[in-house]
Length: 424
Image (cartoon, rainbow, N blue to C red; front, side):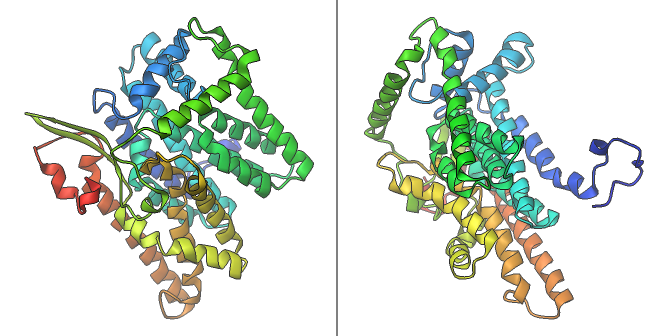
């Protein structure tokens, strides 16, 4: 890579940043600004924020364990952000401060997409395209500005699994297992990534088992502060009994009815999205609609099976990794006995939609399958094809943004975006 013009060679290595790295950071700047400014609306708690945000405050204050059905780390992270920037420094009000912490992890997870693409051997431009496509995925955007736990576990899991997969030995491999332990400490939905890590790790099995033990220890340590709560403390001797209680709590939640209940096959087809907020008043309506980008979802749908074919039939290494990262988290929910499932459970598999599109562009276009001509003409045409698709996803993102960011809309305006009755 070329260095940025004007930066001397004598400067420290970490200051010599390539032009491509600077361009690659543009999605972070764009989505970061958009998310941080949108975090202030709505002013009230929405959807599952009513559970997690009060629980985050209570944990940081050491008063109670309000949301006992989930592990504590994600709530501690949100609570820590609140304690620093709101309770002490008085810089950001509530509930925006909790959402800002989620934004940070959302951007970290977005950067993990770039890291995965580069680790798989794809070009920097291909990686940047995958990052843009992931950012234009509606569910990533909404979840990254919502005070819930999912974006925390996914960010830790993506980075942790990447380290475990890349490094056969050394501290970075163990850092990966530590991150996976942190992910599990945010939400048990990390389970498929733990399975993937055990089978995809570059290290010998003995090291994998040691890494798994480190992840387990990390998970255990995050529960220690619960023993010091003023109300409903969890003694370390009750660690197993507490987890049995958590499992029982999940059974109670799964038995409940929900208007947006859906099945795993409805997620990639966009049959049943979720409304995080629909507030109607005489002034207008505020909406937060959690769905997927229809341009991205419906284009990539056949490729979800093509990537499996290339992984199995042609031994394509990149296709194999992308297929595992997509299908294992999805099949986890397909096989899970839990009956109450919602569209946002698809957040983890959906991180691979953009990378799969980019893989298809690189792999299938390499032989002139999509375009015809000489090698130079094919390369140029493919570049424009991918750029055009990214821009088309951007247009869809901008079009649907008014019903995703909580702004005030005229009465009935949301109907203009409801292409199908099942979306309401």
